[in-house]
Image 1 (tube, one colour):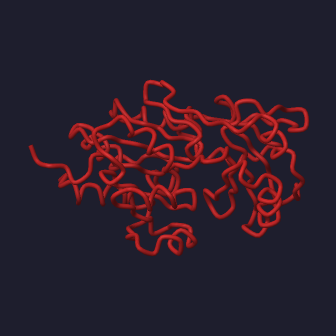
Image 2: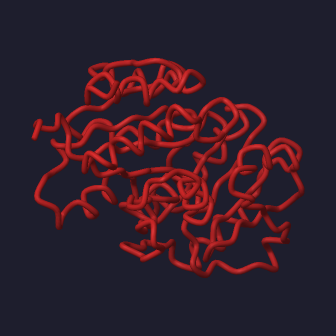
Amino acid sequence: MQKLPYRAIVSDMDGTLLNGHHVVGDFTAHTLERLHESKVDIVLATGRNYFDVSSILKKTKVKDAVLITSNGAQAHNLQGELLLNNSLPEEIAYQVMNLPFDDKRVCVNSYQADGWFINKDIPELYKYHKDSGFVYDVVDFKQHHGRDTEKVFFIGKAPADLVELEQRIRQNFGEKISMTYSTPICLEVMNKNVSKATALAQVIEQREYGLQDCIAFGDGMNDVEMLAEVGKGCIMGNADPRLVQACPQLEVIGRHGHEAVASYLRAIFGIY
């Protein structure tokens, strides 16, 4: 049997594995199915929620995969078994949800116990979840709770809208939390030590290979550690420029709209 160049492929989703319509394209789905048949482990590592991701992957013929969600706060297998969970402390989550910000420029969201909560109705966000049907509930966060919070995230109209908020979170919570950007306008807050990289390391701890046997793909600042720690990290051509600056040693490949991850995988694994 031909030796595999990598034992696992690890991919971010939005801006990476998903195409310009925020869904898995047919070319990508067939590529994942071929890799799965070749006994290559498939790991999706995303800022999305488990319910959101599992329903997307279930549209393919892949029967086994690891889903690292909420930037590493949780991991499940495709059958729904919880592999790891690292939620924010309830009181910290509640405080972060209720930080002051410009309500005309920024909205606050949380992922909690398979639910998505938001402070106001923004129908534009539906386009990212049309494949899964995952939708939010509008709540008053002052009347809400902090239980089972995988992450709290703030979406601004422009990157500048989040600068002051980022500084305030750093000052107030420091080492008690992890903070990253999934896109230049989406600031995300998780429990301390949470990242896609730490979750990936935990997930493959029981396997007969290590991080060096993984190839990973990403486009955002929430992918930095993961891309830097695997055997081969690849940056999308449409990536956040800050990611390219943070990881200048990594190869930049094509764009997600062209299903570049699938093309790259077919080339290195010899799938024709």
